[in-house]
Length: 107
Image (cartoon, rainbow, N blue to C red; front, side):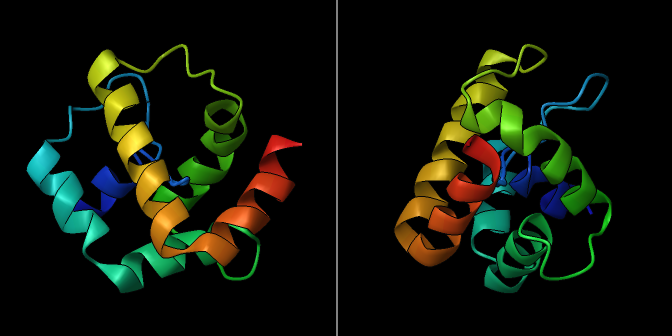
């Protein structure tokens, strides 16, 4: 569960779980989550309203608008760095889903 939570420290965009009172996610755990394509695709579908959400996906949907607008006041500098890394990953590896997320949440 820690690995899956790590993806949205970022998220997801999707990537982003910048929650208060959450333990920090290691860069290794984040890398493991980014390498789990099925997990990423589930979270992307959740964020787009195309599939049910697990707790990670629900958090993603809450934070996505803030992160895409460049505002996550409760995020630490490490979380911000991890969020940027995850967003870049999603942009490169899931461009169609990224475009939909930007249209849905950033507008």
